[in-house]
Image (cartoon, rainbow, N blue to C red; front, top):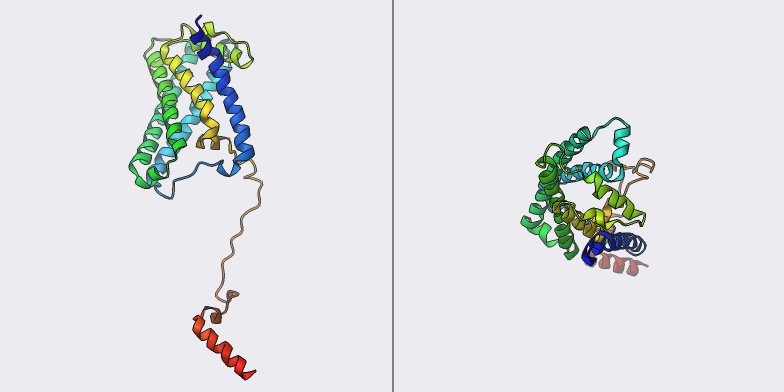
Length: 257
């Protein structure tokens, strides 16, 4: 076990998680006005209408797959009657479909942001950095899934024997970096890219993922009332007359008085 391996599989993940927690707290306390997606829909909507749902719905299923694969031990799935081969199919087939949706959605979003000049000019430096690391995390994960799970044999690579217990123990401060030594390089790159994305997450537009509209269903309705023909504004026509004519009228009234 070398110092570099201990850094990548112990120190670096802890530092990334610490940066994430501290960054979220700091952003919430001092930059709530910037807690937004900085939407560019006003500049272009056709490609956004296609790419954004494809990306976000795909990411939702990808995240669910990560939680199932990393949080639930193999003994749990066996206990409910799901053998290893069935789990491999359940994880690989929907995961690959969700991964394709995410990649296609990301390509559409990047193409839109680069080609459309208005969208490109509204892209901040933090957005460009975010897209680099987001692309690295997504592509590395997709490559790892396809190369080791789809084309990696009947059972693929059993990450629940190495990566899953490693990350569970890491989160309770019981690190076992030796469990990551023999992991395929594709997964190693994905893990490093993922924790790097977690570290910069609070300082980018990705923070909007935690803006859950909890009170949306209970808040009062917004009432719109139309102005009928018999309803007139508070302003009178005299207020919109030229200044010169108003001045003359004031002088006339002054003379009369």
